[in-house]
Amino acid sequence: MESKARKRKLDAAGPEPSARGMLLMGLQLGHSVRASCGLARVSESSYYRQRASDTAFALDCDRAKNEALCRAESKLLEAVQEGDLTAVIFYLKTRGDRKSVV
Image: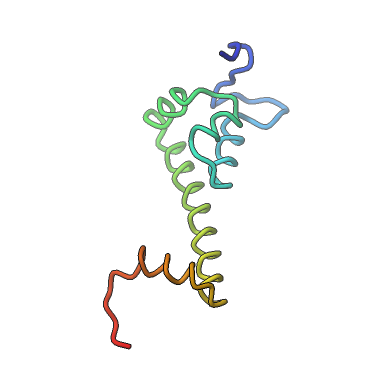
């Protein structure tokens, strides 16, 4: 178990990158909440507590997760446009909810 001295608060300020900033960076990179909390050295329970009590933080987290999702969707569409059959099949299985006439 990690020592409490290594854990940081999500609202901590100082010369080094804040725990909040590190956590948001992890989410923007597409990491899970658990991995992002590890990167920021905060507990997951602190993340969920802060998220429940701080609307601005919750919105920032949602934006960060959305950025990662948009980046992944963009890469998927690039692969589809390049003719990657696996990407085409994946796209159709997950997004092909409309029937089209070929």
